[in-house]
Image (cartoon, rainbow, N blue to C red; front, side):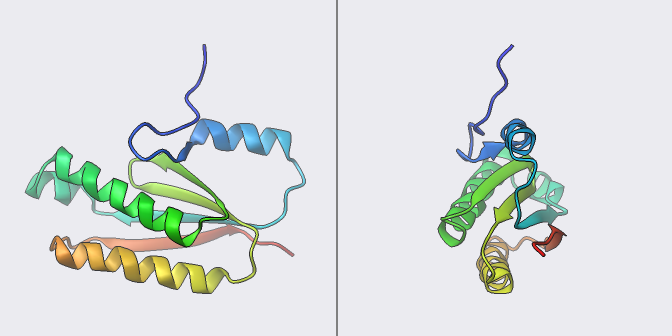
Length: 122
């Protein structure tokens, strides 16, 4: 059985792709960032799945634009992982938070943007 390595909605790499990369590259160094859009179910309740999909696509485009040299994975409906081998991590995260915040204000969505650095380069 072949596993899907590209997300059909966003074109981003999937969790399966991430697992393959980790298995192949045991000694990779860098930052692994988890970005989670909380309370996204409110979008479905207020609008529809169609609008949710459009927002997810928009967020993925923002991530691709900001992290264009990095590997980006969509690991669940509202969770994205980014492997960042660059030292300017806080700059990237601030840009992302600001751009996602603009979408939330425009759509009047009361969500929160969270990120955690899961792995840091030494």
